[in-house]
Length: 446
Image 1 (cartoon, rainbow, N blue to C red):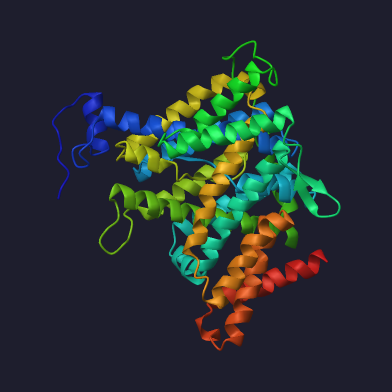
Image 2: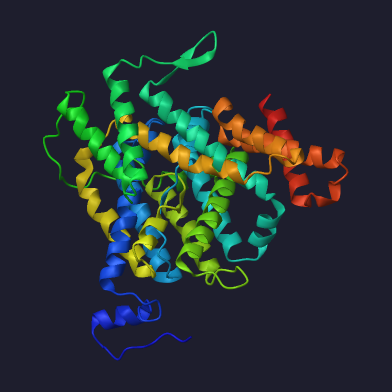
């Protein structure tokens, strides 16, 4: 079926032709609602990402702006070039890995971590425009991909529980529950319950609305100061802009190469999974399961990552929350353009950063963890050669407080078990190569 072409020569008509509104049976109103819905579903990232990266010592105002602009750039490229209603923003999990594992855990300066993010984006771009990506995707067992997503979910949830004080350190048992009668902890619990209710009631922007409700409740009971203003000028990007480029020479160590690989690995498969899921929901997949313009969609993600790193934020990736916009009618890249516009407008609301505290964002982290942990249901638990590496991957991420360690331990365990089961031929050569890389990584760390 060929797309219908209208004869309208107006600007609106040209937009309709470019995005093929008639072919996709859509219109401006439908696309606008789709783009707005997607924005509301993922707007929480503006505050959550800022709080997480500020824990790594980065300037809050600069990160807030970098997050919004990186999201807008990603959405615009995806919408205008790949023409998909899929939005992008700095990814959950990757921002936590950046702040808590790389910077705070490994002691790597955030400036160097941004350089690693930029390089991972460059490599991703090269893979996206070549056929190498297919070989890599096929090399990694699906079970380990599921485990990686689920493990990141547990890792994010642990961060939310820790930051809120629901879980605290305890010498005898490593961790224990905190003071659940503390007003600040009770605020987080309230936020979690309210957010969960929004989601089970089907609110597309449930996480964002939950944060708003929690912040308002915090101000009402006096735990959060009422802001003197809501709208202001856009904060300066100077503290973070361009530092990634100036620190590129510092990446030539095994430790940092592992960091770059982890950024790349998680972003690559997270993006691929999101693209397939949203495209399937919107009916974009061909009968053979392939996705038209897949190279452009993946390249959009990589360019957004490079741009975000230069601006001053962690890896930018495609968001599964885009499915909310698709559910309300978004069918073309114009929906992503609308989402980009809302991200840019929201840059003027930086005073709200003082309202959205760690106890306000903690419920969002826990809920996102729940959503990501759903991948556990796809793991073949009765096939131990898959179940054991998957379990190690999942459990090691929160317990070692490191996404990279979880991936490494899982990738080391998998080929060993396959070899001793007599199925060494089923293991892709790339997996054997990664086995030795990660083994050398642990030996080097020791």
